[in-house]
Image: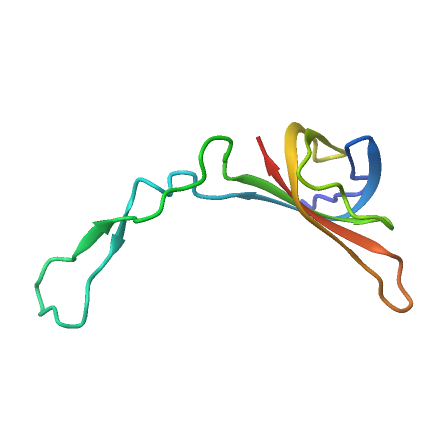
Length: 122
C-alpha cells in the first residue's frame, strides 16, 4: 500500500511554507558515556581490544538527538537560533519547540526558488 505526502506544510516563527522534502532524524544522544576503540596493529591474535573513555562529551542539555531537515518553496531563509514552535501539518504532523540551526536559499535556472532548513527539536 503506497503512502503519499501531499499537502504537507510547515510554519515557524510566524511564517508558513510549502514543503517539497522532509527528513526526520534521530541521532545518538548518549555520546559522552561510551568508549572509543584504541586498538593498534601491534596487537597479536587473541589480544583484548583496547578501549578508552571518549575525551570529548556531547553538547550539554537540550540535545535530544532529534532533528528535521525541510526543503520548501520560498524566497527567504529561515531565521536562525530562535527557539520557537515548529508545526508540520498534513499526513505527517508535528508540533514541537525547535531551533533553526542552518538555512539556505537555492536559485536555479528554469526552476522555482527553494529554501532548505535544519531544525534541532527540543
